[in-house]
Amino acid sequence: MQVCVIGGTGHIGKNLVQMLLGEGHAVTVITTGRTPIPNGWESVNVIQRAYRRGDAEWATFLRDLAPEVLVDILGADAPGVYEAVKGSCQHLLLCGSLWMFGEPRVVPTPEETQNPCGFEGYARRYEEMLATRERAQADGIAFSAVMPPNICGPGKIPLDGRGGRSIEVHRSHQRGEPVILPEPGQTLISPCDAWDVAQGFFLAMGNREAAAGEIFNVGSAYALTARQFIEVYAGIYGVEIPIEWVSWEEYATRVSPDPGAHYHFKGHMCPDLTKIRTKLGYIPRYTPEEAMARAVDWMRAEGML
Image 1 (cartoon, one colour):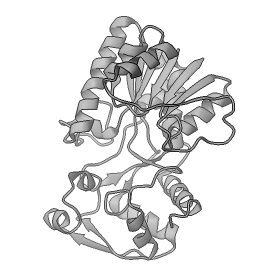
Image 2: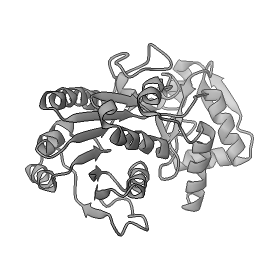
Image 3: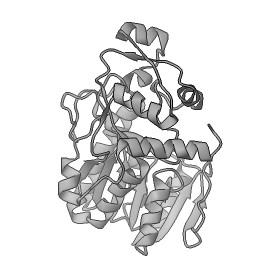
């Protein structure tokens, strides 16, 4: 297959490209240039270009590429991308997020709207994703989407104990400094290695008929409670990390007023993997603990810790 990956040098994309190269596919990668090109990509057609929503030149550029399969990991403009490639593309795959379904009513959470998404960017992208799926189905073009939870592993600073992705907070974990968490500490968090996110795309491409029209969760085989999440970091860093338990109101005041930070310790992030296991044979390679350890090893190798 001739496959184009938008965002192909990022933590998800580079894993997917390696899988595609291993199967002998012709791969074009579009990158903004913010992340380095991995070694061993001599056969990859790497194009550095800005990704701008609503840019007519960008649309013409994509149309001229005429990819057979397009994977858009950045996912900033699904309707525009679809319109540009619909003349050649046989399978369009988008990357979303478990957050797009809104705060869950069901845990583990299936691939359907739970509540209105409280984050404007995610809400818009989800609406556009669903509209693009309808258009693709009407035009007879295969469409699939992959919805990861908390992405982890090498290449991305992992979620920290304050609900963000901060090197400074990870350094405080490394020193064994206390963290503040909202009671009762049973919120579920699902760190998922970027390799397993890439695997979702790879399996969908290899099983186009089964994947057509589908939105798939990906994730680790199980989730961690907030308490377990901190305990895993304590084990990785070889320290004790004391936890101070507070009410939600006190947490928002003392830790962060940012709803995005709160959400990690309020709304369960635990995807139901039944569909992707059944339809595509998905089996996560990495446990949450392994994904977190791999991310910390990467930060150490990069000199961040």
